[in-house]
Length: 445
Picture (cartoon, rainbow, N blue to C red):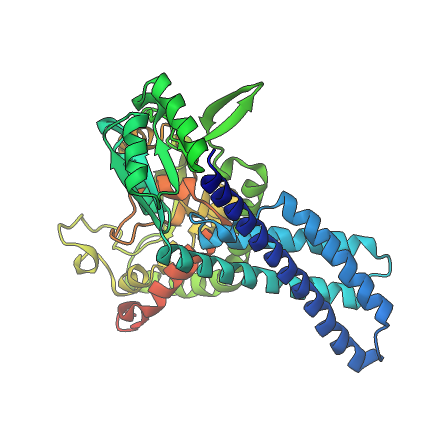
């Protein structure tokens, strides 16, 4: 490695070390500020807090923060991390620091409890602000890279640039180390090399690796795409061999499953014990007065792994009405209160019973009839290479450009599930219902 490239590599490592150190120091002072603010609040009520208690809390918090950040990486500086991922990592760090600091002291003082709670909120906000700043910085200071691939893997350039902030790639069709060296001579601002090993001969790949080491460049090897397998792959070390294995999906984690199921139970019980009894009584009276027949409609739908179950909804059409070719509310088969139920989507309230029983989930995959399930499963395996392991949902994820859910939207949701994504979808659907002027109209009642 030449002296100039060695200096560049040393300067980069020092810059990263300085950035991480400053962040750790800022978060340590953030912990100190939380302890100080709470000590002031407590001092106004119970008198001055001893200085030794303040230094003890600060010392333990700083030590634990230093240890925890070594195990939980700060992805606020990631060019690919989503905001919910950054928030999740910040919450993990804050919880780890708070729990460890809380476990040290036996007196369980209010100073300690409120300091941990305040630090929990402050660290999450700080990481999100750092992430926004870093993405803004990356967009204005783009990383220059070279992609060495063949025609079969050219799609990787678009995939990398769409999912990474500030990365600008130049594709090279010449797959030799000599051509790369000539390119680097003309473009010294290049920082990284991306290449697909299957597109390059072994000798040339070794030469490119030596060239990157001499020039102080970062070499990234892209896995060979196998379209019949799950595209979400992760590297694992089996002995001394690195292998690519299907990435573990979020809902395959038992903790995430428990969180999602607990959320379904709590929210469904909240709805069933508050809104549902009152609205069911009103719906019973209105439906019986306006249309003869049962209050509920029972449909057979497909859920997880094609399992068929009975789904309940309030009846919105006349019981003896024939199918109509008109769309939506223009169908003359609807009675007046049924139109209101269909507009406001209140017809779906009985489905919370199915959520409580475990056949459905609040946010899940699209609901379908049994005769449509075979086609859905074929599309799922074509896109995902996995079976249907997601429950049917009262609502589901939709791409912004699509009015209805699709198989690809279900796949995206399954790959990217998080508790915060579920909350965001729920609030979006609730906002859509509130802003729907027709749903708020009472002309149909």
